[in-house]
Image 1 (cartoon, rainbow, N blue to C red):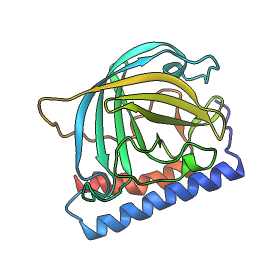
Image 2 (cartoon, rainbow, N blue to C red; image 1 turned 45 degrees about the vertical axis):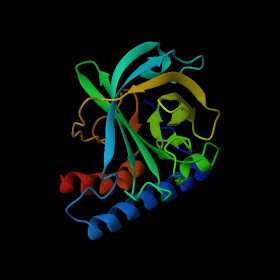
Image 3 (cartoon, one colour; image 1 turned 180 degrees about the vertical axis):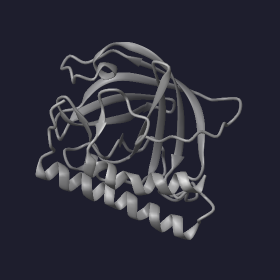
Image 4 (cartoon, one colour; image 1 turned 180 degrees about the horizontal axis):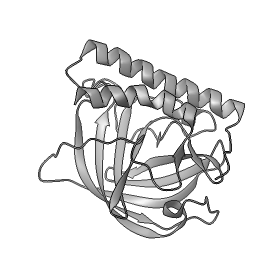
Length: 216
């Protein structure tokens, strides 16, 4: 796989976003060491992801080809503030990959060329678009995955190479579960084949997820 490095703008924006995330994780971990530093409480639901594929392939089979996945989804508030207070919202999606699984973690951001790398807060979980914030390394370059709400229980999923145009590749419908299982998501360890972590991205991500793993 060729190593397409992000542009200076992408790298700067993504580094700032990742650095802020790690800083928040460390601060919250110090304040509440007995709990998860980020996304301490959430709701786990099931979902059906219908992927229709892409007209401009990325070289990542899961994105490029049509398919249907039964997924597990956790919706949460990043800091865990009361519902009346704006918070960064999170969406964790576990997808089957052969006999294994992969985790995608998205947080509320903007949708523009730079704002897609900037965390944003809102009261409504669907009030802001969400992205993976930091890019994956893919065969076509630094790639982000994003989601936008179409309704209370429906989202469209898209991907973009760097600051390029978004391509919608799937539709995710959500349904409640009778119980609320405890599930731990880890996008650093559990990745979709074809999506790799840049070394600098992993260094930014790992402190937050190491703190989360240590709190469990």
